[in-house]
Image 1 (cartoon, rainbow, N blue to C red):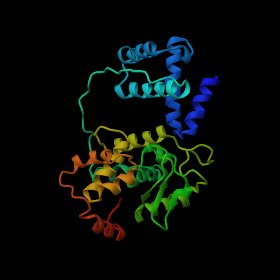
Image 2: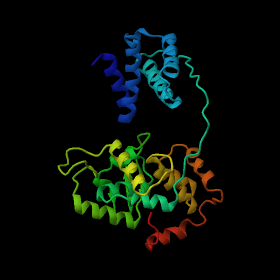
Image 3: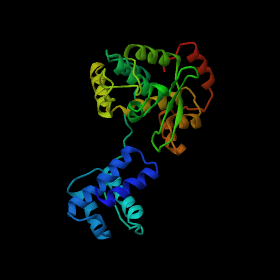
Image 4: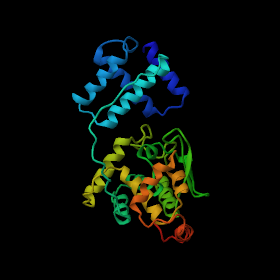
Length: 286
């Protein structure tokens, strides 16, 4: 490992970057050096700008992918090489803004209940019932479940922040059933019975894809649609936007506000406490 790469890793570790962010930033710098066959400290603004043009015109990378590479490169030159910020531009055609297909409550419940496999069914139910990102589902540990308080701890979610999300009584019972069947030791979800390899993101994405086929759901979108469905269905129940923001782990409330367009008659908090009583009575499957 080169000293520059090690220094970059050390700085990202100190700044508490997530493993996924570290991996993507390192890949961005590696790809840049591979393109020029030069050490990154031998490159300047002109070379970086030309590389970005190459990504857009020849590699045909999406805007978000280009932006992610740019963020990693910027971090390296500013934080590792201590160079002033370069004026780097990303020129790409604007793509039409499309609202992803929203799952109805009925579709979401059918999806998460589709797998015959208890582990797969529990994974999808946790994803939808708690509004988690897929990376957060596979990172869950047994100790994160607090059945007494009816909550789930999400450790080091996006932005390296811990948070708590509510667990319904139905989901608690599902998790208990799962634990009694598999007896996981540390990580909640494993790929095999020997507990030597935890479930990965891609494995859970495939579970979601198979569930869509089982119920013959043709709506577009991957497993993140369950998180969108959770957020929208909570707003439909009248959950206050600031509470939903905390459950979803959004840093900026404007990120949470984007779900309001799916709920045109949303009135913050009007039916929230009534629905909580319904959940306690076992009438709500979230």
